[in-house]
Image (cartoon, rainbow, N blue to C red; front, side, top):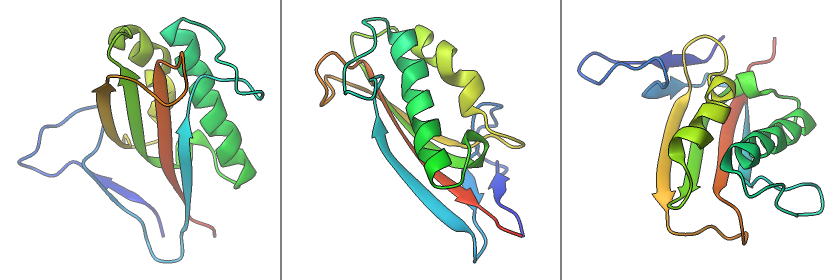
Length: 133
């Protein structure tokens, strides 16, 4: 039993993302709500989007670990980036960690006018799946 990520013929092929993930019956699915670049008190860690991005991924990692998963188990990322943020800097800081293992995960990204946390430049959520032997 394993999770299968597909890049079907007829759709753009990218090393950065897949289009379809098939999770087998019996796998544990873990949903991580939106995480910003904030510390454990809710304070934004920096005005720099790259630093916020790294912290947001660290926060996702902490949430996943609490549920018995890792970043490598993520099958779907959703990334919201504030319009005023430097997209290249944000993505450059986190791209290696979004990759997971094997075939790339699914990714949805959007530029937005603002986020719910004042000063936040990025918000990341994830869906992970773990197949237990």
